[in-house]
Image (tube, rainbow, N blue to C red; front, side, top):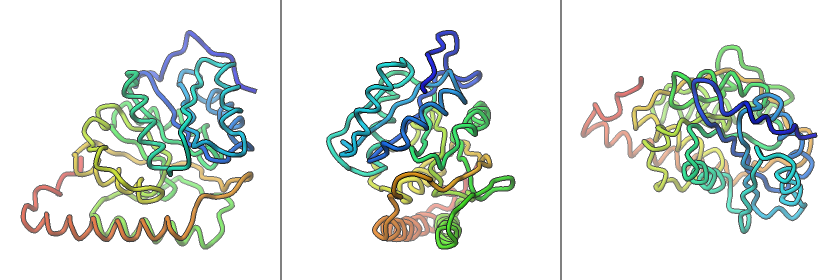
Length: 262
């Protein structure tokens, strides 16, 4: 059940108006649950479900949720264009409406809405907050060993290739303050999947914004199918390698350009 709107609670103290962007494609089994949990965990935030014309009726479910709760909004997109494109559309939607911070959150329940207040608290002093699976205090529940290995190795490779002291550069549970989005060249972003999160980490790092990691509890989805595929992994590997080589050439010419880390 979606909670009724609390008109006395707006945004998050010390952060301002917050929009949680939840991309969906065939998440009919999950979207009502995740919206209800977000509304319970952080009653002052708004939710934008960006649905890529899901054939399973996810969009219609979201319309019903939005009709019952003014904190919930729906962005209907013409078709399946990928995670990165959905988030970029959500960022644009938020910036056009003057939100102070935007949250990335998966629809499948792997990102616990109950962790959201801690991430928003950290955003009072930071420009980008990453909900990390691989920092002290974090937990990963019910993930098969091959996914654990893939994530661990992928993040290690991204950290070494790009020179970013981020333990979970592929993590998709994040808070971006509006000033961070203004500092990042979003028009240059072309990645999807894991690579999208790594690319935004890299761009934020290069822009010199303050980034912090907060431990989260990450739980494998119980309903629906994972969107992970060999193509997503291959894209991430290719792009990280390309960025790493490019950054090393830039550092050789101008070492101070990549030396910033607040």
